[in-house]
Amino acid sequence: MRGWRAPLRLACLAPILWALAGFASIPLDSRIQFSRGAPVPGSVQAFAWTVIRQHCAYQSHELSQRSFWASDARARAAAGETVYSIRVLSEVGWMKTDPVDVIEMTIVDDGRLRLAALTSSFITCSP
Image (cartoon, rainbow, N blue to C red; front, top):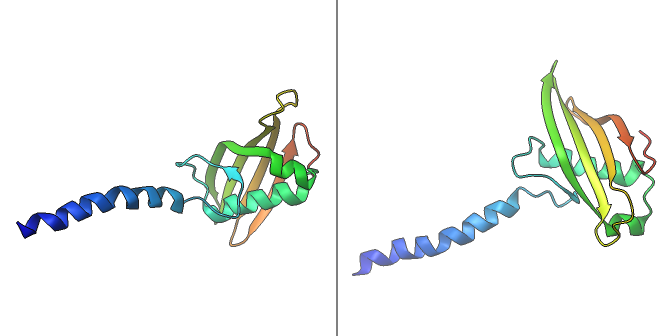
């Protein structure tokens, strides 16, 4: 009778651990939403957010009102470095009259992260 309690406890604990594992991959330093299968590690995601904050002409209140999500994120290896191409879409959810901003950036990881290219369709971003 006592042998069935341990598996029952484990079965009850499994959904909780599963839910916590889903949150573990979200970098806390980035407001850009990436899909679960994106080939971009958390450090690069945080760096991409820093690029938007520091290089794009958003006012601080705009950054808090806008949502940012990576619509396309790719990684490729080249000569001892990894090159990440990230396309970020940004909009204000409640203000549908503003156009969706498209920010495209290339980040190179050669032991340290550096910005290689940055363009934007609506807001001014300078590398």
